[in-house]
Length: 157
Image (tube, rainbow, N blue to C red; front, side, top):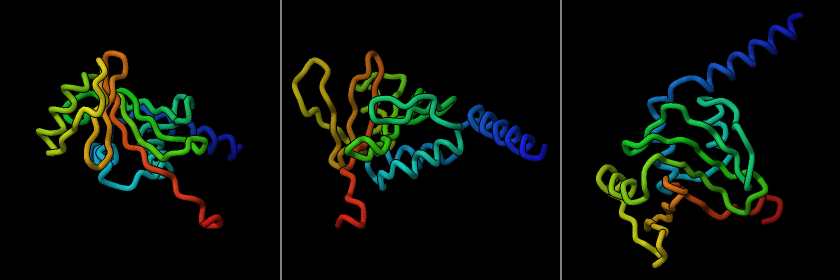
């Protein structure tokens, strides 16, 4: 009986976490990760997002996908956050924002002072900052991400 109660309580807590508003430090934590200003530990971001938004709603393309209800970065809604899983060769954190890459780039420059350069001449150019953060088109929205090479496990170094 107690086991069932604890299981139900755990499910309720996870459900409430998924419905909660983003924490006040969301912009600092996730924003700095997306701008490549901090470590890009997929474990850290997975735990952080699970704590405040609940479990990922899908696992696809080498990533865990989280819905981030009511989250805002640089003045724009953040629809989803993507964290690399263990199958992907890089450790990355990314976010889909409800704005164009041009508008996101301007907002980041205005608020954080980080500039981006177009690194190709395609119709939908990739933008990259000096620390390595990238902004790309994601249909009519933008995706911003930071990817870093995963180090070998300690036993293999």
